[in-house]
Image (cartoon, rainbow, N blue to C red; front, side, top):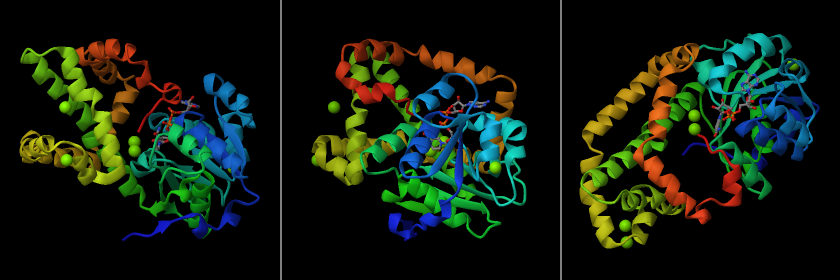
Length: 339
Ligand code: NAD
Ligand code: MG
Ligand code: MG
Ligand code: MG
Ligand code: MG
Ligand code: MG
């Protein structure tokens, strides 16, 4: 079993006297900045003028431009959207890095796929909480944390690991457990998880189920409840007690249906498709297409997004959710969940 690090394993001195620059104040940025600050770490936030600049000021941070924060920070944590990082790094971050500083990420994409080539004289590592930023913040406030991965890409000071763990403790993740990985493993598994299972696999499964019922003449409202709404209960049970715990709670009829029909729907051909998806991630094909798509101002991304938003399951779901205000808690309404 791989080693899991907790608060007690962390050498807090690694961040003492050091300034941490949080670049970007979105989902992860706001959570890291607030948690680190409340953990006693010296934080400066670097963000461009606009919406999140004001939010960072309202939250009581020392807020400056990206370039200034990179200059001030001993550790520079890049929490910009992955597809913006390379450009902002070249134009506003690189010049602020001094020998012995740390360049830090929450996802390995840009370093692993060579979009950012760090200078040779800085430490480079990642600390990636395995949950959306708003959960990183909420669990910290509750005295807990979201588990995280860390990985060392370059260790010039000999202290990269201590710094990574101290950072993980500061954001609250060492309360929940921190595992070591590599940039390659974190990047490839994160992309695979969101594509094949968490986001892509799930939305395709739900849509196919919904369409099958509606095309067979069943009411779209009923299909929505069966194929989307009830998912939450099932996922919560799996989160708490695994698949066995979920199966304990459902009826034996449902469990028998799970056993005999599940493998017919997600079968060996689906697994073959997953292997192809993984291969495209490993070879850099996916990364290249996504980078080029952004350079072309996202024609395909926007077209698909518009079509998806008009799908019948979205139209029907919007109406049904408006009649179920309890579905959205106050907290959740505030939270833009991303993966
Ligand atoms: P986000 O989109 O929520 O926030 C990005 C921030 O960067 C915003 O403050 C935005 O205003 C700012 N920004 C955008 N473009 C900019 C530019 N050109 N110049 C200056 N500022 C700019 O991003 P996020 O979801 O927090 O992701 C940040 C990093 O964290 C990514 O590497 C992502 O992969 C990683 N990550 C995210 C999650 C998640 O659940 N959201 C989980 C783990 C890791
Ligand atoms: Mg600096
Ligand atoms: Mg992820
Ligand atoms: Mg049912
Ligand atoms: Mg049962
Ligand atoms: Mg991701």
